[in-house]
Image 1 (tube, rainbow, N blue to C red):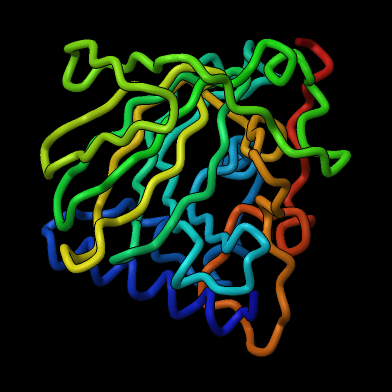
Image 2 (image 1 turned 180 degrees about the vertical axis):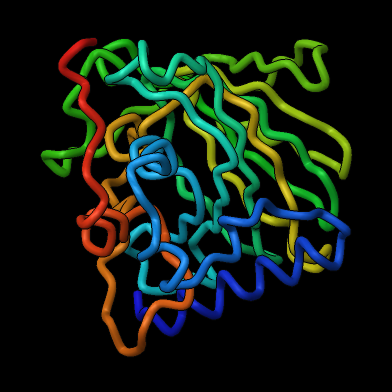
Length: 251
């Protein structure tokens, strides 16, 4: 993805949130000057991947296949003593007709809540036992496996069972709970407008806890055609190396 595209996407997401009277925390608006002045007291933002996340899943066509995320809070798989939160909260922006490709999580259980805008349609499969046991996932490029079994998910707390490959539409205000091992693909229903989702979940690490049906790049490769206006979490290692890490040796 080009940096100019990422800059535009984040600015559009900020405007979308503003238009719906949803204030974001101050660090959502930080530019490079603010990030570069940070000290070690801000390590939680970096260590737990808080802030913006933009990806096209390696598609090269963000408008068709992509996702914009703002992470408010998250725990940490590796340093649970220092960061004991067992939960995460995210804001997800889905464009009109935009697709999130099939994937599941090995560890994360998540609630996806349609907080307004358009409708969201999800297509669901269970993974096979062999697929779920393959902790290397799609790193070898091997496609994931769909199970031919019914899928049961709570919709606003009420269990609903659909056949493998069945679809569920979330109207604004509705929510769905997705369990580890449940493949899900979603799309903003074309013609209904962009969708604002909230995710409430177990803490997670998006660099290791996503199993895609067809391997794609979760973290984008960025072509720096202009300077970043705002950082995404994938930038932290590159741009925030001046901030000393906290000492985890006592954990």
